[in-house]
Length: 105
Image (cartoon, rainbow, N blue to C red; front, side, top):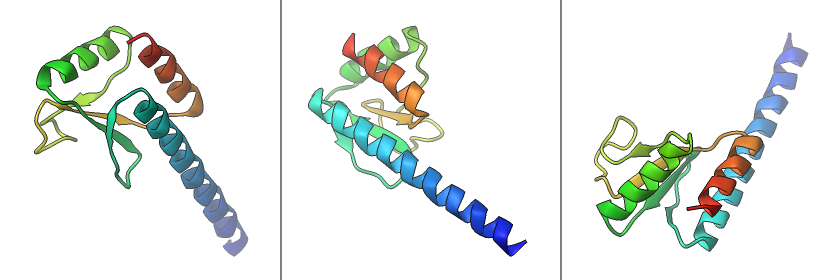
């Protein structure tokens, strides 16, 4: 049983490492695109826009392209106004698709 647990521990450590890399790579990409990224220790990427109108445009664009994100003062963004967008870090394929979509924004 101990060997199985050790094997699972290695799996989860590797998974966490992979998610952190995906998140960091995505944050770097977004910063290069001019987005204001707020650093966090979660698997979420938090973007602060200079106005609610800018955030609304980005939010609407993502939704029209099949990307679901949270915009300010929702369940996972409590206390943030509508100028904040929060998106979860997905798989490598999902994050690559997100980049392709954002490139068209």
